[in-house]
Length: 256
Image (cartoon, rainbow, N blue to C red; front, side, top):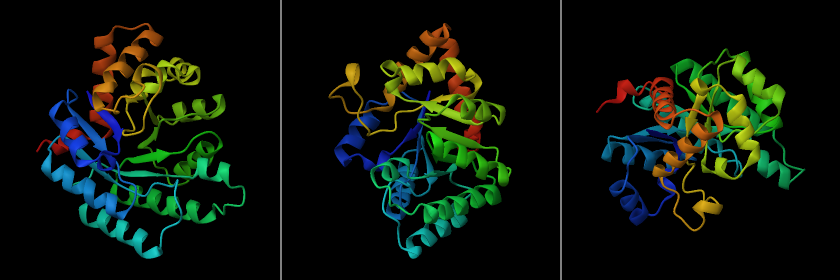
């Protein structure tokens, strides 16, 4: 089992240690959120062979100086053979929702540079793109004929879901599948061979996960719910999602 999306560098050092010591998953895709995050994720990946690094810039924040973005691209250029993906990248849906005056053109420009880099280096791309933003991102992916796309914690309308399925884009499901009907509906619609399990840790979850530190082991709960919704055996779903993640991220290249 692989946690397909986690912000490992956002945990405190003692939390990281606890997480590592109690880990039941086989590994985790550790995404980055800015230049400093890229450096921290890289360090963690060198320390722990089951941490697979991705470099990117999270869109739900103020625009960075050009120098910082350029440094991220320099890191990608220098290490593209040693990272598993470009990510987390995307569009600022929630920031925009809270600020109608936000100029999103620069965010589009940054994302397009990351899409171009993913194409250039033949790397998967990890996307933060929900609701109407997902359609915009699909346009960009199709423009550059980028097929290796992972929409993490995806939410969107039926037309976009069908478009993503047609394009064979991956999605990942978080522990909120236990209490969000929207996500349970998505699980029913999306083919099992295009699904992965993630935590987006340290993001906290509600209900049965209330007051718990988000842990990669929670993907066991995600797999249980996917199996329940799709009326399939747990072991079949666990194996399929594990295979999906290994194959999508080409993890066989990173057996350290």
